[in-house]
Amino acid sequence: MANTSSRTLRLLSLLQTHRFWAGPDLAGRLEVSERTLRRDVERLRELGYPVDSVRGIEGGYQLGAGATMPPLTVEEDEAIAMVVALNGAAQLTAGPLAEASVSALSKVVQVLPPKLRRRAEALRAVTDDSPFAEAPTVHADVLATVAQATRDAERVRFTYQARGGVGAGEPVRRHVEPHRLVTVGRRWYLLAYDLDRQDWRSFRLDRLSEPSGTRARFRAREVPGGDAAAYVRKGLSRNEIGNSLRVLVHAPKGAVEEQISRWATVTAVDAHSCRVEMDGRQARWAAFGLGVLEAPFTIEEASPEVHELLARWGERFTSATAGSRR
Image 1: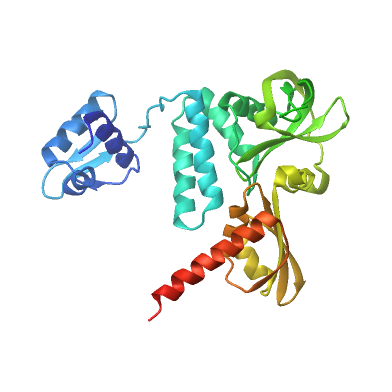
Image 2: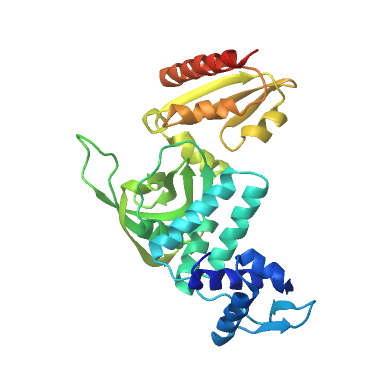
């Protein structure tokens, strides 16, 4: 049984659907007795929530008109983490799980305090997804500040370390017009127009620090090619991408796109085949992409790491299925 506070929030969440709940059904959902349910309802009424009740065999409860959920009490980095996680789940899944993720994301945003709600909505509004990369190390305040400036079309300044490791240059201050946030896998990039260099640039957020808005607004420019995620991916160096893969799939483009279009670029070769290109910092992501294909394919180009991993997986799966045959 949940503790009293969490159970009360759960009760409020169920009542917020504004459907009429029969007493036994509601008690069953909360795994409490009807007597305990009545006490929890009284507790909500003491907190100011208008819970209507009907006595008798057909009795039950319903939340009155005008009632809302209380603000969700979380820290700013916790709010950003919830939005990132739920948005990622919605983007990378399909069917009921994706729908549930979208529903949960909407509910979380609705009950955030106003300041955090604005930041969360800004993050959702300016992010494009393009999978396959390793996990980033990005501070929540950096992500939130850049997202807010991007949504508000506000020029921003920040400190940027172009490359890490030995021989890296000194961090420099940049002045840009932020246009979109792009996730390549789980790594974050800012696509922006660099005002000092008068050209488009993409910046890794884990190398970006001390962002600050300038209060100077700008008119949005047309992203080259019209697709921010594609532009960022195209500009990544081979060191950034890590492992590339190109395969000829013996199936129509439309059928393949339904399976892996989120993870790869699919180009038609003819009516019965297409070419699939993928890349990622970790070889297993490319292997996962091939694993979901329900069609035969031929590898045209792959990094050594991908080749080695596919060979190991193939031997392991073949051995496993051979041992189970009767």
